[in-house]
Structures are given as structure tokens and as C-alpha cells.
Length: 299
Image 1 (cartoon, helix red, strand yellow):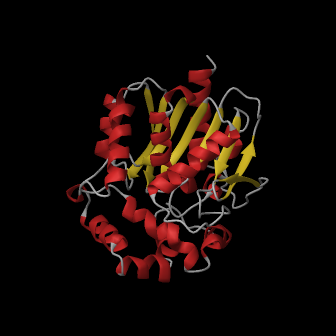
Image 2: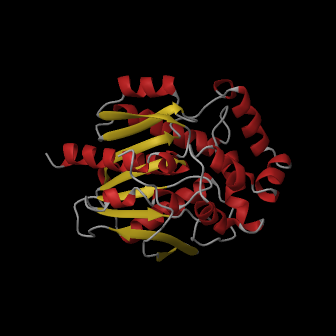
């Protein structure tokens, strides 16, 4: 597994679906008539490209849908606020229009918040949840270390954050490579840069940090996260968590707490890693999901 190469290619056919006032781009692999549909949702500032090396591990198991969030990747860029609420509405409409059932979410970063919320609200339609570096609950500033507090307070600042994220494209040029766990190639960086060539196109990337629930703000985000955090630990839905250390969101202490207290959960320690674990451990994640799926759903 360690010797498997990480490909920069994205050899999947593009599909587009009219959703609300725009279009969502997605890939649709595997068997459309399969029992389960894996729905892969990325976060900030990535796209379905992040899942390129994981999709081939999942497509023999069922249908695999990897979408680009609205305003990101190859999806449309409507004139909206790009709040957490907006993203939830677009993804829920996307799932409804494709009539996706028996969903197994594979989620990370903001994709986890969207997926967890859907699982909480549509419990009968979610068969399993795979998550890592996921947004689990509302947080407080004192939980972050000095560097995290400095960065995210800067990101959320209307002027300083705008300059960093919109003017200088910090999230794509610096944060993503810094948190990928390995040196991304020029081809990989070109894929990630493509959706954000203009300042106007970076609005979703800029808005996301302001949607993190910190010290109770913003209220919508806090309420959503508290609601699904109240549900998830005791739910019987099968869950698989990957974690790495030091990580960025799910750190050692939280990973241990989840492993020991969440019901119907399996956990895999990937080893040393940061945030975008799909770029460092795609084959370990893909094979781990396949092993878990065959154990839980094919016994």
C-alpha cells in the first residue's frame, strides 16, 4: 500500500446538474443500480479533485458521487453569500434531484458539516458515515493553539482576511500545500488553482472561515453543529473515522475520546498527517473504507 503512487490525473467524466439557480459539477462512477451510494464531499478550498485517488477503491463497491460544492471546483458561481446555510441548501437539493438513497457519506472539512447535518435530518436515508479531519461541534477560541488562533482570527477579519484570501489567494497557494502532508506537484496545484483565477471567484473561499462556529457565532452554524453533535455519538449508524497526528481539527485527545465513546464506530490511525489526508493517504483511506464496507455491509 505504501508503494502505490498518488496520481495527479482526474480521469472521470464530468456531469452537471441544474440545482436551484446554478449548476453542480460531479462525477458519477461505479454501479448506479448498487445498493449503496457513496457521496464524497470536500471542503475549503478544494473540489472533487481531492478524491481522485480514493474513487477507484470505492467504485467496485457501489455508486460513487463526488461533487463540487457551489462556487467551487467546476460548479457554477452564482451571486449568493456562500454561507454554510447556502451550501447545505444546494447539496440537499442536489441529493434530492438525483434521488440518492442508502447514502454512505465520505466527508472531510466543511463537507463533514454538510454531511453530518444531512445525516441528522435524514436518518432513514444514511446507511453509513466515513469522516476525517471533520467539523464535529462548536468550538471556543481557547481550544485552539496560538498559531491557529492567529490564523483564523486573521482569516475572519473583514479587511485582513480579504487581503490574504481574496487578494493573495492564501488558502490555495499557501494553506493547502502546507496542510497536504506532502509536496504537491505542479499539475496538482494547477488543478486546485484553476477555479480561483480571479478575485471574484475566491468569494466562497473567503466566506468559509467566517462560518466556523466559535464562541457561539455565527448562530446558524452553532445550532446546526450542536444538533448533529448531540445525535452522532449515540447513533447506531455505522461510522468509520480516520485520524492522523498532529492533525488540524481532530487531534489526538479528541480522536481518543471519539474512539472510546461513540457507538458503532471503527477508527483507523493513519500515522503522521495534517489536514488534507486525501493527498497523503488516499490508498490507505480507500482500502480502509473498502475493508470496513465489506465487513459491515457484506457479512
